[in-house]
Length: 309
Image 1 (cartoon, rainbow, N blue to C red):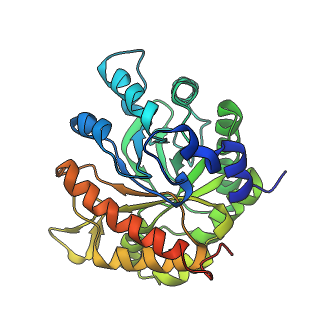
Image 2: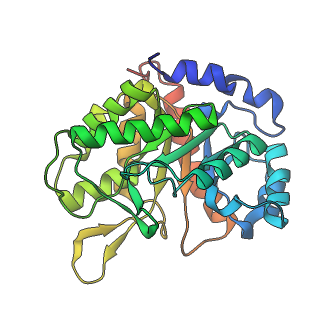
């Protein structure tokens, strides 16, 4: 199988020329920051003139045949690049991806032509049972074969590579044959997928499970990173600061910004998203946080030694 890298991903998806086709997007997507697009912000998103801004949506919110959300998303897509982030394929589950779910994802991707489609390294369904969470699993050789199979099914259906996001973890599951970074690297090698590195997830998991977040980030194969997520977290109200929750309902913490700087200094700029789902602030507040990410991307882009390893 052809080894998929950042450069041939950009070439195939046409990202290097993105700014030439999308009004108001002065910089290629690969070095720009975006924000999660929420229906409450559609009007302001359309009117925003920030250079290089792009948006990400959750696939499951737009898997419908019509209606006002799709109409508004069409208008946004005319002006800005889109990334589609899925939460329902259950790629780490023992079953193959649900055919109806995958079909609707394909329709959405064909309609809006996002620069990236991503999913999670987790499972959320078994048979006809669906669980409202992204659940962990032992990273065994069997699991590697199963997840690889499910990624390949998804990529074949979409006709494009997808990016796999590292999970937030809350308990230490027994029986691993691979570290998480090793498992992700093996998925890249076997399937040609890319990676979506959620820096907040790394921070949350490192606190909850007690590993070194810098060592984790230094082990990530740089050429496979196609997008970065930045989000806020919360402290468990009963356990306290020893248990962090990936709640997406707060600003990005100082610790996560520091990890973001560290990752960028190693791999160079990547499309980077401010992800917010709860306690939704004003669009201007989200843009201010997005601008902090954009400043960091531009600073690293100007640094000669900030190159993908």
